[in-house]
Image 1 (cartoon, rainbow, N blue to C red):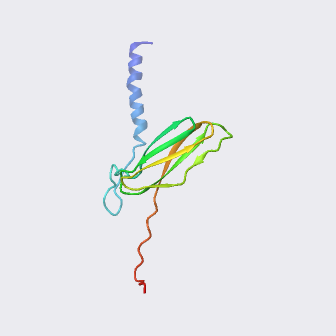
Image 2: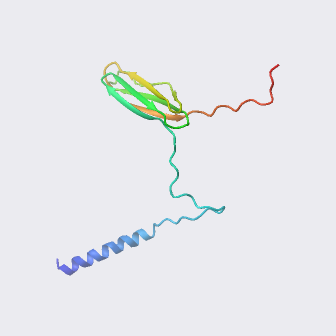
Image 3: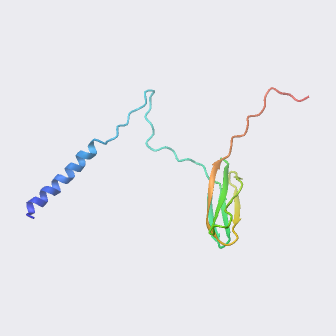
Amino acid sequence: MPAHRGRAVALVLPSLLLAAGAGTAAVHTAPPGGRAPAAHAAPDRFGAVCRTAVERTRAVAYCHNPYPDTDLVRLHTECAHWWDLDGDSAPVEVGPAQTVRLSSRCWKEVGSAWVTHERAPEPPPPLTGARSR
């Protein structure tokens, strides 16, 4: 292959790639009411930080909530053997600055364990206008 043919391919290929990408460029406009959306949304300040450990038949998770909103955490355990029952714990509230310990076990071996998170429901508003006699 002659040297000049290789240079021609090297120059044409980037041009084709740029032309192909030009048709897919996104256009961002401000909504009709005013301000444009922020480039980076603020991170969601929610969710306990959990550490999970598995040792033979037992699974343990420690969850600490550094945020002001209450987190409901559950430990899910999948046992290694098909005949062994998997486990899902009841939801446990982790309030602000609290740490909880969740544990589960299998008869023989734990295959895997993980924690799920859910926002706690908002408390009902206080009753107004009703007086006790």
